[in-house]
Image (tube, rainbow, N blue to C red; front, top):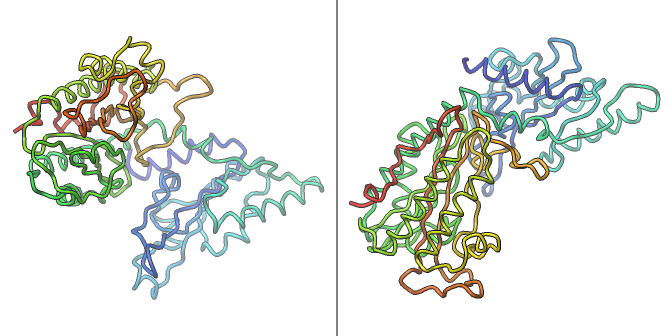
Length: 439
């Protein structure tokens, strides 16, 4: 399936999910960084998933109630030579039809006057309230005007629903093209992690390693980092979302690197590796690393059709807690410690998340009380960790922590595809065995 067919197939599936509802999916806006400077543009993931159109301020309509040739409408910025000299190429209205296969396209300034015409006859409107402040007033005004007509017997939309109910379950299962893009993102990310590990020496600054990582993303053809890269030496590794990246890396300490690249079409890697800055683990670091690696390997084995994210998490927790009991950092029965959450001063987060166009990708983990079963084509991270510091008090009745254990923070994270057979670790090029982490 080529690129055009991929987006066309997604639109067809989305239109089928909508039934008789009309969907309004806006593109992202440019975001001001300071004064008149803007952040690099990043397209809205839902809009990108359905259109592949990478310009700001566009709006897509999906209209299953309309006749053929009027089901996919794009409103886009017009061609403008003066603006393009300053800000770059635009596809314009004809480009939206010729290159992005819209049934019909208009200048985005026509959206307010055209919207009512296209919504008429739909049962409901699918639009995300609170996310698109420039578009929302026009949607609500148009809907209000249509509701006024309902008293005269016109068939108009009577409800407004978020697109997540229709779209995010489609995004949860990746198609074959998406899987290849995620595989590419994981490979670029893995190679960058290896380069960073081999570049790390005592006395370097965390930011120098960040530079190695992010240069590698770009050198390999990536768009850049998928999120704020974490390079956390020593006690900084116990801060889960540490991004200051400005401390010196010290011999006999660990560095935790949580970083992934984004491809030019917005698919993401998300990998964490932890290794000794000076090349050799201390005995305490080695002991904790062994526990985390065992927990991760055991949890990855649960990435199978029919299993669920809760089972993966609980498998990791059991191995982590068993290991911490053996090391004297927890005491009590395994089941009691887990049931009461008495391990959470050492492991306080979940074991993974969906991965795709968003790093923390869309899709439910549960429906009511029932966990969502894994299916072939889903991609998720598996990332247990142990973080030993004074940041969280030790629960009453649990062992106090000796100084020799403190400031050890270890997380190991991989990107894993659910297949019909065994788990497919997309990020396997980033090494992680004990021996491989030492030099």
